[in-house]
Structure formats: structure tokens, C-alpha cells
Length: 330
Image (tube, rainbow, N blue to C red):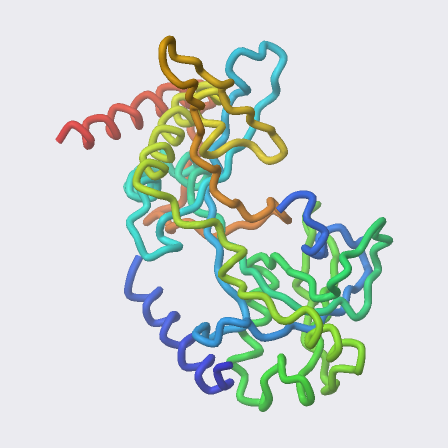
């Protein structure tokens, strides 16, 4: 586990780099976004099992691709498919490569924000005060937390404060974190969340849980890195989404699909005079559950955005597709 000084050094390094460059149904995830307005959940973060990770969290970058509906279903509603951003693995992201130039054109800024990566952070720990009436809780009390940028910035700022002398994840001298939910402008607001002022040693039950279940390797809960073929599929899905097409479950379901949507591979195909063969679809990537909505600030334009008339949206999409295909042809 890295020291507080090492965490501060790496956070500072990331700050410099940024300034010079431009799981549904899994009850192991604690849904803090469901707590009532005015209530407070108290949690205790734990270290990552991966000792090579400087931090006690891991970052997740996802891109949301909206579709008009499901192909072949006349009564289907709009759906969204989440795909991993390749920048999460230190690679070039085909979607962001196309989207970045859009912010240079005022008429395309809104479209750019729609397809920009959404950033969240995966932590693990205990829920010490739970205001939720959960139907079931996992046998392993070490829960996972999907934290959005607003809460993460509070966590990060405190870690950079010289007055924090001990690692907040320390089993003896660590501190709990209090998630407070209010509303602002009709949206959930967590700006009053904070670290507890008093140190608290883990109790006997918490220590026993760590001994029994062990810590998680947080990197295991990020989507697996897409293969070259899957990156090609991501590019195709992006173009189909921009064009306003319906999502093709039969074609893309084995790769990426809307949360909660089942995919059934094609039935066995029998070849005459030969041994029957089965067309086995590649396994779908393990996607982290869709949790609380998270956002990340997209590249800022040089001037304030001017909203284009609604009737221009189709024309903009058509222009964008021309740009994409022109780039690919070159």
C-alpha cells in the first residue's frame, strides 16, 4: 500500500499532466445514489489488494452510445449502449479521436459532450451507517462503491491537505467518509460530503471480514480491454449511433448491448456429410454495472456555445459522418 506522500505526489503529477495536455443487479455495489435527500451514509474505504496501485481506487472511463431503439422492434424505446473508452488502457480511443475536433465548432459542441467519456471511480470498503432499507445484502460485507467526480473531488482534495496526517484507509488510524445527499437545481448534490474528523480503528467484525473474505483487486471490476475486433465494433456502433439508427441486437449483441438486455447466440448449424458444428459467439466483455449517472467535463470550447436550432441536428449528424468517413478513406 502506498504512503500518503506517494499518493499526494502521484495526484500532483496527474494535475500537471492534465494541465499540459488536453453493474446492475450486483448487490455488492452499494447504491449510495438511492439514499433519500437529507440523509447520510457513512462508509469506510479499504486499500486495493493490488499493491502496485498507488491509490485505494481505480478509474473507469465509459462512453454512452444512444440509439433510437432496437432494430426490428417497432415499439422499442431509445436505448443506450456503454462501451469502454480505450484511453482507460493507455490506448487511442477511436470515439474520442473523432469527437475532440467537434469542440472547435460551436454547432457540434453539444454532440461532442454527448459522446465524451464519462469518468467514475471504483472503491471498496464497509458501510458503517446505512440509511437504505436494502432487501438483501451480500454475505461479504466488503462492498464496492462507484463514485462520481463530485464526491471524488472531495476525497482527492482532502488527501492533498497537509493536515491529513494518516492514510484514511489505515486499519487503526483511518477515518470514515460521510456521503451526504441534498438537491441543487433539481439534481442530486453531494457537495456537503466529507471525511470524519475523528479517527476510528476497525472493529473486530470488520477485521474478521477482511481475514475471511480478503480484499478485492479493484482492477478486476473494470471492463476487460477490448480486442482489436471489439475496437472495430465500437467504431461501428459509434457511427450507427451518430447516424440515428436503431441498435442491431443480432449483429452486435455478442459484443456490447444495453444493460439488462439478454443475447441468445445463433442455434447450432448442421453441415451435411460432416460433423455438426456450433457457431460460438465470442464472450461479451465484462462490463462494470451501470450505477449512478456520472459525468466528466468535456474539453472547453474557446468561446461560449451557441445552441443550434433543433432542425439542424440531422444535418450535423450527416456532416459528422462525412467527416468520419473522409478521415477513414484517407
